[in-house]
Image (cartoon, rainbow, N blue to C red):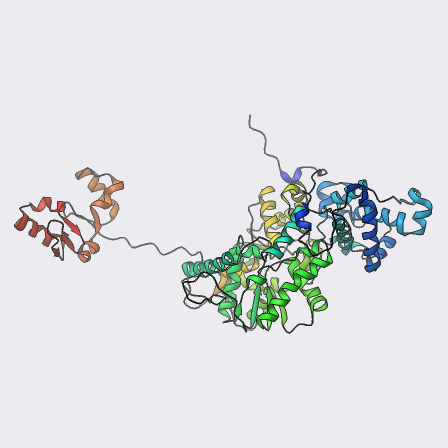
Length: 575
């Protein structure tokens, strides 16, 4: 008997035993944070030194250590705890892994009373616990919304990760990505030529599907060149996540169509080909350095504005640190959602919401909702872009949104079990709506949710907000993207072997099979449209003489080459 299909929503929570792959030394050498590959026996001492530095420079972390009362308000607000019921995935309990070391080494009570107050020496065992559980946190900050003291667990997670990094403990995933940003220019390691080729692909795709030419956002020495340069003096520098030039092409196309419809003077640059900032997930040094790359390129090009693409942590980093850490700036920053909303309100772009009739719901990425308060533009856009936009439950949207389960540096293949368990609350929220489309305006959320939806057997397509804009945007002279072409008209067909005419090709093919023993899959050898037969003309293969029609050629063949008309097809062929 076949096994009964299991309802994934009824699978009970269970702890995840997976661990991240540790980063090799080569990637540590490439990140901006000053690190040291410390021998294992010396790690506890060096880790304490790093912890002391962080507690001294980030007073908020020490404040959180002294404030938490372990009331438990945060426990069932964490998607990873809900999916695993592992007690160490309770935010307060996870933070306690850091707090117990803080108490032992940095508080008077802990130094005097030790384990009585839950204090514990820093050790390699503790560091192993940190590596497991501080990489079981996506830094989504949902727990902080329910904490009566406003404790930001994400900041503690980031502090613990930085301590580990300083002594040579980190994940291959994040360190490799940050290394690629410095070496190549973006998270995916897309080289400059491929970058411009991918943009050209989008231009060509728009032409093929919509029949319009859109502006190429770069400068080529000649139209045939594959390599290009960014345009100096453009008004706008557009910076998408690199995933939009690799897997999320429809999101990139949506942005390009908006720029086209608004007749915007914009450019793109390989030096600023990555909006995402993985420094936000682990250390301040890389957070600042990655952000500065975009600032430097914007200044070099002399643009007036930098528009960031659909990426949650990219926007949080850009909005919160660009001016403060890498200013002063001589340009403005704006998100593509804000930019698009403004153009709709100003009447500079038009949308036909009837093109998207299916139910659409919206995922609020954590770094928009709780990290940068970007909540309303995407809703205004969707209400003007689709016919049936439905919100998820009020306690699961906006500031209370559940994380996708893959953010905060957690999008590792080796943590797939934990990621799917962490994605369950979001899947439940989507199921309640019954949406055909889930708009997720973040590259990491797209990557994660495209696995979560089929895992929970939901027939929901994950797209970007800009993907839906591309479906609805109205541009003069453009075909509707995805619209089926009009069926070709049925044409009269003629059998070239006997001049019999038929109402369609299929009828001629049946005739050829029955009367001339020619199979239907080879019927094109003798069946041709009447118009084609009349227009194409004919040529005698024996003497290369040309004629206006097959009949004229047949008469010629009979007169000049003694070939009967019923065998004229042996030498008379279309031009």
